[in-house]
Length: 154
Image 1 (cartoon, rainbow, N blue to C red):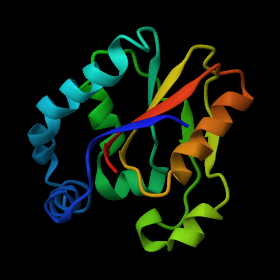
Image 2: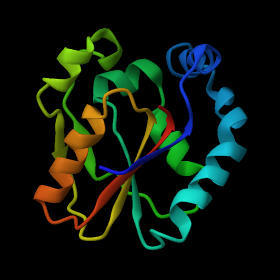
Image 3: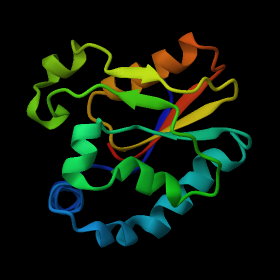
Image 4: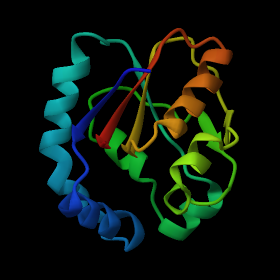
C-alpha cells in the first residue's frame, strides 16, 4: 500500500508525539500544521483529488483515556472531506507490542459505513504498516476501489 509521511521518526519527534498523545498537550499539533498541509498538497492533491480521508480510529476506551483521536486531529488539518468509516475493537496498545506481534496481530477494524470512493487513511505514525494494512483490507473488502495512506511520521 502506498504511504507518504511528513517526517522521519526521530527522538525529537518522538518526544513531541508522546507529549501530544499521552500527556494531553493537544496544542503541539499546531507545530505540525504547516508541514502537514504542505506535504499533503505535494503528495495527494493532484493525484487523488476526489479521495475521502478516513482517520484511523481509537477504540472507545482509548478515546476516553486520551480525550481526542490524534488521527482525527491530523485529518481536520486537511482540505478534504473525511469520514469516520471504521470502528476499532479495543486491544493492547501498538506501542507495547514487538514488531513481530504487530505484524501477526488480528485485524481490529470493522466497517461502520461503506465507502465506494478512493480513500486516504490518516494516522500519526507508520511503524510496520500493519494498522494501515488492516484498515485498508476492511475498506477494500467492502468495495473501496483504492486505499493509500498519509502519516505524520515514519
